[in-house]
Amino acid sequence: AQTVTQSQPEMSVQEAETVTLSCTYDTSESDYYLFWYKQPPSRQMILVIRQEAYKQQNATENRFSVNFQKAAKSFSLKISDSQLGDAAMYFCAYRRLSNTGKLIFGQGTTLQVKP
Amino acid sequence: GAGVSQSPSNKVTEKGKDVELRCDPISGHTALYWYRQSLGQGLEFLIYFQGNSAPDKSGLPSDRFSAERTGGSVSTLTIQRTQQEDSAVYLCASSPRSSSSGSLSYEQYFGPGTRLTVT
Image (tube, rainbow over all chains, first blue to last red; front, side, top):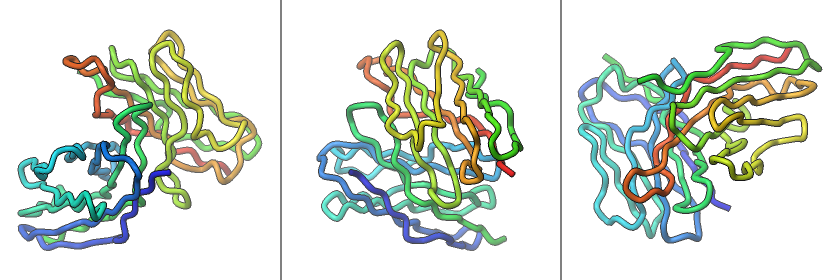
């Protein structure tokens, strides 16, 4: 069975600085998707960024980028130029390429942004 | 356009009562998922519907939990004889088919969830 681990329950960053959230996963499959979701206090999960495992290039979405290390099964999220609106809980998630598409989530990391 | 909606937003019930949680997916989305977010278990998959196919119920924690999806649209998650450990936020998500490949899109669109408190 696949598992996703986020070892940082809480992180904090100064506004305008850079922060990296860690995620590791375990799978025996070679093709899959990885995601980072953001959950603000409103509870609405928002997709931040995704990575297809077959792609070697790290995904980037504006201030958000990932460091995908397939052999190490590591998938960290870097947030540059942190903004107050980035404060939220962040979840790393895994999805198999086939079957139902259900997501397997990590435990989450609460990010605090200090002004 | 309208996103995924869920009702009620919050629900407080007494232990032993039955509850129904509703999810309205985005129009045209063929796939629908229920997840549960609790302090002890984190975010976990419950059930998945795809068109007219048999649902994937592999994540339902007990036979007190059931769900249905009528007409390929609205879904209801029912919890019978609620227990205190059922207290959680129940999230619904929907997903379209990829317009290019026809396979299931990678992206799931989440609703705001229902916070269930069992007293």
